[in-house]
Length: 181
Ligand code: ZN
Image (cartoon, rainbow, N blue to C red):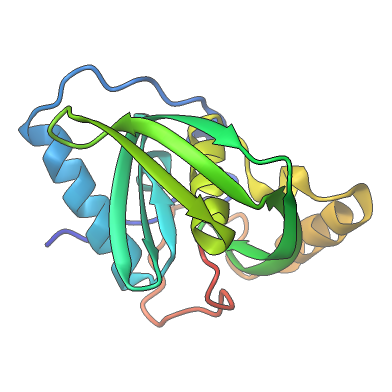
């Protein structure tokens, strides 16, 4: 079991688009294991590879008691929208309502290189969209309306974690409202 430090807002890797996985090897399987362990320990409902400092298109989720992972995801979004609370393990303690597609069909690969399709709605759909955004260097605060985004930026600047020289692991579980992603 390997729990890796979670990169926080301000770390440039969170803004860098991740690259497609081409080698489905032991190193990739270790990455999926580390992502899963780190996500469950946080605890969070999802985690993307850039959040632990790896610029590959891989993410994991843990929603309604089920853990999963997806590599090189391609999403098809429903037109129907959901609006509700969202948070991010890279932005500790922030929770803001964020509009997302209500459901999603995500195709990609598992860690063995087999093609897989995941269908999800509500929280699973939210997690998949949030994590896929991470792979494109997008954070959920980018998707807020301007007023909420301003409030979020103010909260970030005033937070005790922002501007720390090194990424740190929070030892105690931090409040993400159950929506840390
Ligand atoms: Zn996140």
